[in-house]
Image 1 (tube, rainbow, N blue to C red):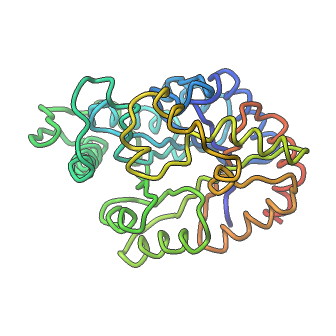
Image 2 (tube, rainbow, N blue to C red):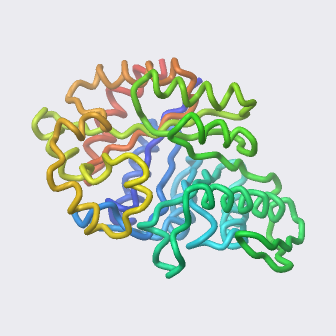
Length: 319
């Protein structure tokens, strides 16, 4: 049965308000949660960037929901530190935590002062990080010399079971590569044919575990308001790679998105006032094989969304 969760966007909402929202989501019937891990927002209009790992400790204690995080080891985070963070949360919350690993964006990683590597180098670096993290979570002492360097690292606090390490992908090529190492796949909403290509690429390459989907949406009772929310908050997020990978500052995203129209935002965000339409959309995503779907309302006030979907949408899709 498909699990429907809530996505907590640290780059948009103060961590205190996010904690209130996920607690409310649990009460409303959402079955899981996940969050982003940013140092910088995508836009000055979003205006937040709480530290995901501190917040996850609080959120796991404040609810009984399972949680995941999308993070990028290799530059801002040394892989041994990422492994320690994953291991501690998993040890304290058995069976309730997973981490999706990606190659990252310059907007978060440039802060180290190191150069931003080419995509192929970032991919190779992530692959090294995955091996380091898995070995550490298995209790091994790890030394490694490559795109990342590790010297005799060992985790002394270990979970009873190694948590799932999920691959993050938006293209069939990356999904196919993730199948080599991942315990599951996560991607973002796209036209059904594109999602089918990504899912099939992962499965056909032998990818195991569940398929996860993050669904960007904007709901309000008024259609103009729903579209205005999406345009105000998410127009900096419409750009395909390599633009979204390589821009460094929120101000850069704001400049390049000055002329993005509401219609263009609606191509990447599911915008509607119709809760039955959302139920149908979720059924469609589930029919493509996605077993965990995380709803990301791109507005900054999550409570009306949580209450409306808890009352009218979740009963439709979980019946």
